[in-house]
Length: 167
Image 1 (tube, rainbow, N blue to C red):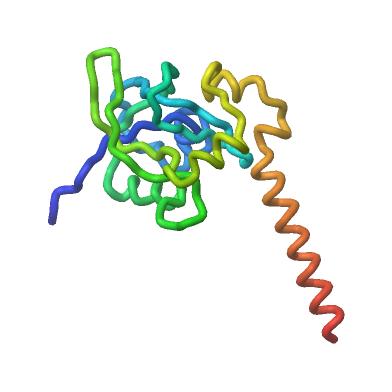
Image 2: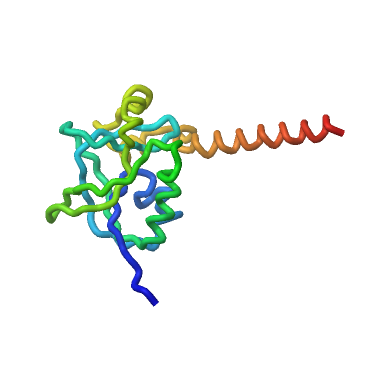
């Protein structure tokens, strides 16, 4: 039986401890350190954060975890990096920790989408994800789930209408 590969991953949003993504994918991950990367943080129209790596003086705070190859692949699917319909790309980046620097996988803005993100999304670099998220009203925090549920119901009604009208 082969030895399992492990990777370090830097998370700065919904994969951080206390959020749905962590509960879904990271519960077996081993915490390594808190860390910061250089870049700007934007809130996407879907309500999740997107990091743009740049030369600004902004720092994006997050957490570093040790994860299995299987978990990394699950996160790739969650972030959508295997499709063309996502803001994210996977990079190995340098993360500053209390004890120096570590290299870790991170899911950050794809260079193609950076102009779109800067134009269409809210820059939350000055407060960061956790502080911004604490201040959001209930609807905004759960907007993605609410919109998904509403769209699902609309589609179900359309299917029912189609079936009824066909007979």
